[in-house]
Length: 295
Image 1 (cartoon, rainbow, N blue to C red):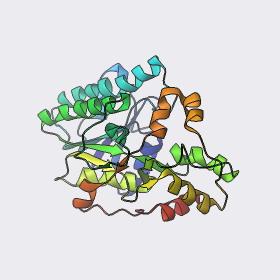
Image 2: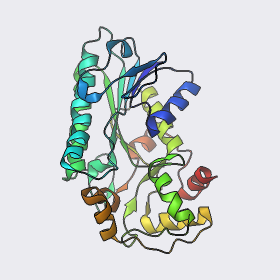
Image 3: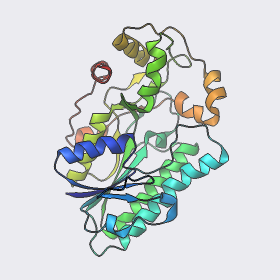
């Protein structure tokens, strides 16, 4: 397939490029800082539709572009988070509408932030959204992607959990303190963590492209969600280091402000659509996933 990927230089985009290239697909890559080489195009989601030649004759589009959430939220940062996802996705769909030949499928990123902080509730794709800032952003993000339904394009929204990768994301931030023996459970360790190995995430995006019966929301999490205390024990065991220093909620709130709610929130998310539609996780359990990434 000829596939256009926005946000192609990020952690997920880089993993996807590697996976899809290995499968023999032809890629067109969009990024704010695209290298000057064939197949790459500069696109800022706030600037309007992508360059038309980045979309022409594409069979599929994967949309990952968006302002990073993992930073301290000021009013301006929150505006960029919302705008890059809502207006950026709407601009992408406008670009698709202008094509004489439409792609068959749009697979758009979303996030399990859709559900908000839900304690011990078990959250399938049928669960209702939360009511906090990130939930509202995810709802509008998905609504913007589904504007492509009217163009006859199949739309899949991948609600991404905590991505575990050795070279970026949450795990890469955890590794230095844990390696020094300074890790520990967060705010008592009872919050649920719904995670996915980065390789499984790339495979899930590719599966969504290639499975014509899949549409709408898909939870991109492993079936092995754990509480934070259990995650802490697994990571410390994988590293062979103690993890006895608890992280109080107040410390995170002082460090990250409102964004700390994302770290402190509890979300027990299950991948019902993926499992019921035949997707097989390579890394369903946390301990083997961590050992693989750390090795």
